[in-house]
Length: 371
Length: 177
Image (cartoon, rainbow over all chains, first blue to last red; front, side, top):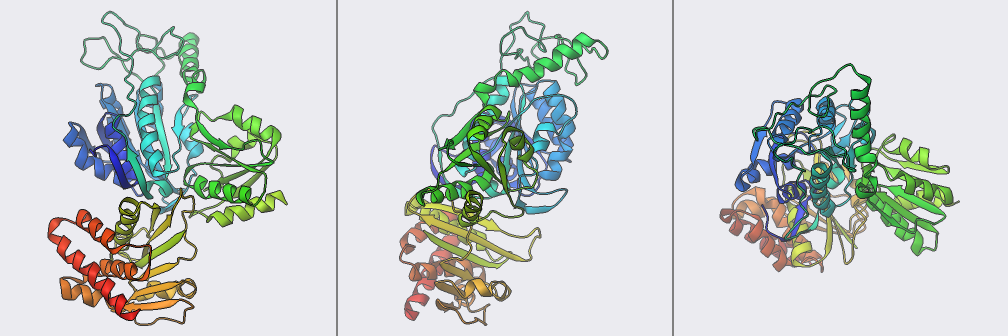
């Protein structure tokens, strides 16, 4: 693990270093471009800090292993991209249902299917939110720099432990494979999951306001049942009754929805302008550069960048959409579009595939919308 | 803002060279630097290149449409970039592998990087020879800082070879200036 200081790092390496700094002690994964560097780095470094690294036979086994290790009390992570993220969907739902803290890094590439392995894309935004079956809410964060690959990885662990939910670091090849200066701090915010007291029996229900029940480890002496089937507060299966399904699923959703203020985060600048450019991930860099250029040329243009994709900052988007035209700039055709569309009336889109644009290319689009 | 592209065929160390250059400019010289790489989904084939964008302040320009300095290690790569190459300020080619250079508006430096590197130890160090040449061409790229970075970046047994490669590349360009 690197000491505190300034480095020139690739985004994926910054992510791996942040995981160790945040206390991650277990990684299971299967290599895939453009996420492999996370795994490669942790395979060498994680054992040195007392952690375990396992290369699994595929991505289904990888996330299953991560879920298992989380139930032994370890902060756990995997990293993947497109096809691997698709394979993880069923167990991602299992992690949601069993309220298992874990971090899943998806360094998105151009899809669908195998697509273009080395090229960036952000077509998995909706999959991150809706990819597994049934009703649920999840947390997904979107970094746009190497520094944020570090910072938001740390935050992913904190949120997953705080809310007992899988958190997806929704990166893309643009930031994963980018190198920049990054500051590794002495200390980062570390959150540990709520633990039960010795007599407690309810690990899957709570009357607490935050909706987060305490989580024991296997082997600590508690009677512990963990199932992806609908269950009661003590973990016992109830696959038939109305009340069990209603109480559990409503709480899983409320756990994220009612704590939204604590979770959601964004960057904004002049968001009351005539035109506000909404962008995220690596694409938001040239988009932000274009907004800066437009303002320097005297145009009334603002900028809004969700760092939390899910839960989406929908109230803020709606406020912006009430007073301003919105230009969504993204590295996909269907990435975040439906979410922004439902919040904003006057929407324009700069969608792009395969590669990032220059600042001037986004700037031209801004001028076109203003005309 | 300064934009540098180092291009060649996958396996020639273009990304490695871009990383050394980026690290040197960012950590030794204090610039804001974004370095990107591009390669195809193949083990050792196709064009591979590394882009380094440098500025005094925070950077949001990640993409290079036309670099100020273009370093090329392979003929096929240069052929495919003919139009871009005709517009750059400085074109530095490894003349051991790039024999044909079309007319350009900027200045062309033909440095036999592969042969120079081979004379030192191995032609694999051609990428670093071209970095030395860049330091000779660009006022912003400092040779001493590159040397410091090379010393940190390579395993000990390869440090001398690469420091020598840097210096020889630098000298090769000075003779032509």
